[in-house]
Image (cartoon, rainbow, N blue to C red; front, side, top):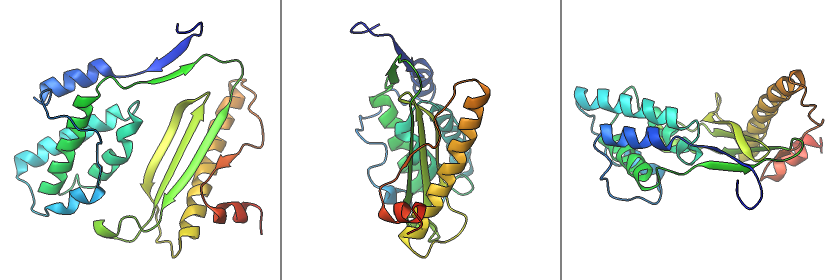
Length: 215
């Protein structure tokens, strides 16, 4: 309880601290951003040893687990996951920065107050040709769904085709957001939550708005 309200929180603080101690990263130098520059991954293309490869796969797997509540590292972890097959020294450098960031803020948590009724917020975005330095020109889809302020679904993944314009990439991402929220609303219907139709999807581009309005 805080300020007369009941708050819900989600966190993995104890698990993160145990993970840091087990991997001797609990004394890592503080970092205020998990990946300030995505090009750090490609800074050193030299492949790592087999032993470092196994360690990399293990650590990235643990980070994927923490992404259940640590949305502040989800984008960075998806970037690191792309190098699971053949990680480089650049991948190791970026991985150590993400872990050092977790050591800086191991107790970050999601908190929302208890409210009456249900409010949905859905966000969609794309990164047109954002993977040019990672072996392709494909764009990335980003979707976030919040229920009463708490994230209940997110995704950050490559689009299957190469978009020839930012408008195409944004419209594709918006389409994926529509599929994601439709499934969640069907589940809400079955639970008797009575969601409101139609729902709004928030985008940061005019192309998606024009497309939706058939202009």
